[in-house]
Structure formats: structure tokens, C-alpha cells
View (spheres, rainbow, N blue to C red):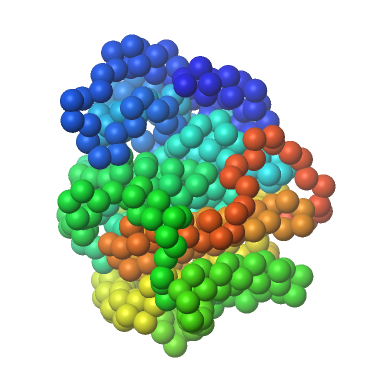
Length: 482
């Protein structure tokens, strides 16, 4: 199986740039001493090769986070997540590409070529888990890990036509070097990537664990697994009450098919419950514009803390991309640092609204992105659907808003545009209901019957016409960074 991954990467990665760091010698050494325990734990992978996003440390393997600052870093020990994966039967074969410090949903950095989507190699794979999602989509690996703060797992899943699962906070191990804080906060969450719901559920069984979290999430009953929930959804369906929302965003007539495709999938899921219809969820239930504001306040404070040392070192600051500098600076320049406590309190109130919403529905469906994958030569769009964006995050808001719900959210393909680019749909469930979400996703996946993966990378011909900065200088000017 290691040979298969190595051969597949050699055949296709020159076109996709998904996995710039491989560790096949390490993988084969691991395989040579591999043993199956007498009582395998839930989710044991029996030696299945797995790709790891380059945001996690793998002992003895280059660990860059897409930054020239860490271009040559080689850690002595693996992260808690990678350690657990290897203990549960995974064989790590490589590290997948990310944007610099995983900031932004476009997987370019100064170290490696930009990662693209196999459905149209002119377009971005998204980010920051773009390498993982493109690799799985192109059948370079069966499974990969990703992570998500503002859509870093969900957006590339949408662009690459695979499944990416931002699980409930507290569900999967994290680095404990910094406290997670309470549930009501903004969390970066590791999650699984796969080509079908059952694969994602299997990897979640392997990844599940509470290391590094200051709170707990409801666990599955004894003897139950996430994979079993996915199997039940595919075989027996899911009787769920479904809601649909565009989270306050509108779609221009030229891409009405996009919204219609997402809405049709939501209606199809609702029809699994005989006599049920898809409910429209408006800003009367949750103020989506305030959710967007909360995300920006909390993210800016998170970045200010994370990058303070680098920003105070002129030599290091010169190695940061302007998008990161801007995002870390606005906590002070816009007075957002002083609003952190207020934002936390408002987030707590919003969480109560979300819990109230889920008393009337079981699954909320939201379009994953505003549009399909864009030109990979553009750092980020400054304009989409007649809307202009003042920063690199603006176009990502459908995912960022859902982040603030503090709920599990899975993106899966729900169709394809005429030019072949995939359309992604977010399925959101109440906090802790990850298994129920997987069951619903498996039921919808069976009804949709879409292709799983793109084994032959292709180059599209549709006019992309993406507006946005193509150089670091243009990005710095757009963000007012000097």
C-alpha cells in the first residue's frame, strides 16, 4: 500500500503539488515493525497509509507550516494527534501542502509550488488543507488529516469535491502547549478528509480523543462507532428535519444554479424523512452579520497572540506574508483587542440561539462557498458575485460564520457546474452530534450518487476571470501593510 501511494504521487503530483514532503523510508521502517495488538482499539487502521497536513509535527520529518521561518525545521517528536494515529495503526507517508501558517484558503507559500484542484488544474485547491483535499480527490491517498478555523478544511473540500469534517470542539486531540479555553470560543480543530462519508467516519474513529482540551464533548455509547453511523445512513437512510440558509449572503443570477444545487440537495435530504420539507432559516433565528463580526474580533485576537513575537522581530516580520501581518495587527489598529470579552459574551448568547434553532431542525444545510474554485494564480478574490472584499477573508464568510456556531460541520459535494468544478454543501448538526451528522451525510451521499474522486487530473477551459492580487506587493497594498 505504501508502494501504491508512492507510485500514485510520482504519476500525478507534478500537476497538483499536494505533498511536497514525503517520508517513505520512515513509513517502510514503521511497516517493518508493525504489529496488530491482541485487542485493536476502535478505528484501528491496520497499516493504512495516511497523509498528514503540514500543520502537525511528525518526528524526524520536515515541519514547515508553509513558512520560510521554519523551512528546515525537523521535530524530535510527533504531535499528540500523529502519535495517536500511529498508535492506532496508521502509517504516515507524507506531509501535505499549506498556505503560510495556514492563513487563508489558498495553498500557496514561498517554499513549494501552489496546490491545485484535480477537477481543473488552473484552479486553487483551497486551503489551508488544500494539499490534503487535493491529494485525496486525486486518489493519491485514501485518507488525510486537515484542520479548520475559518473553513480551512471545509473550503478545500468544496473546491476538490471531497469530504472534510470540522468536528465538534473537543473531539480530536490538539497541541496542549496553549490552553484551549472554554467551549465558547474560537477553536482550530483537526479533522478527517476522505472521498466518501464512510472513509471520513473511519478516520474519525481513529482520530477521536480529548488530549489538549479544557472541556469534554459527549462520547459515543459503548460499542458504537462513527463508521457504523455512516453505514446505517447509507443502508437505512436518516429521518431528519432539515433547514437551509445562505447565512445572509445572496447569489447573483449568473450563479443561481450554485445556490439552487445546494438547496436541491438540502431538499433531497429532507425528503428522506417522509412528509418532511426543508425549512428556510433566516437571520431572525441567528444574526449572521453579527456572527461575522464576532469571528473577525476573535480571530484577530488569536492572531495577535500567536504572532506577537514574530511581529516584534523586524527580521522575522519581513518573512511573514502581508495577510498574516494585517490579521495580527487589526486587534490593536481597529481596537478589537478591547472588544474580546464583549465578543465572548455575545458568542455565548449566540450559542444559546443555535441550540434553540436545533430544537426545530436536526441538520442545517449551508452553501460551503460563494462560488467555485478560482484562479490559482490569484492569492484571494477581492470580488465575487458583485460583492467586493476589503481583505483576504471576505470571500470565506459562509464557512467563517458557521465556525462561530461551535457545532460539527461537514462539507460534501452536492453537484458539479457545467464546466466540471464541484459544488460543496455544509451540513451542520448540534454540538456533540457528530455521529448523527455522519449518518445524515451518508444518506444524502447515497441519494446523490456523485463521483468519488478525480483520478485523472484535468485542465478546464471556462473563463475564470478571478479578480484579486497576484503578487505580494499587491496583497500588501490591498491590506495597507508597509
